[in-house]
Image (tube, rainbow, N blue to C red):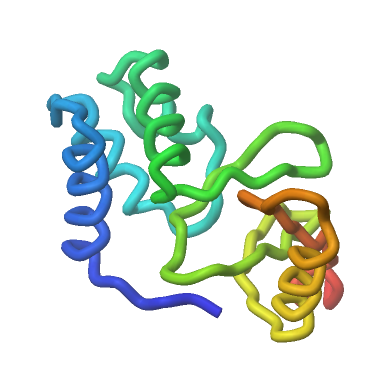
Length: 144
């Protein structure tokens, strides 16, 4: 399940997220935000560094970290251990990750949501977050 956003809406959301978090909107951070908007699929920090040649690596990594902490990016655990990132979609969701090509998809399923609510009643404490990636062979890879 994905939610459509125009490029202007997404750029505004990333910039607004940085501003709302109290961070200055420097020219390099704007470049990183625009590069994130242009990513067609999940990306690594290294991918982003390559697409922002005039921006320092530390700035790219810090900007990614800020956007993950603010909930604007999702950090995905990949089978090889190297994280990938994708724009956070509106609403609670989980991810599928193709183990062959790395393609990332979003999903939401009522059974998973019911299980999480039930788990919340069973644990001794309050759940403050969770992560779920389902590793798959995507349709494109399965058909090859």
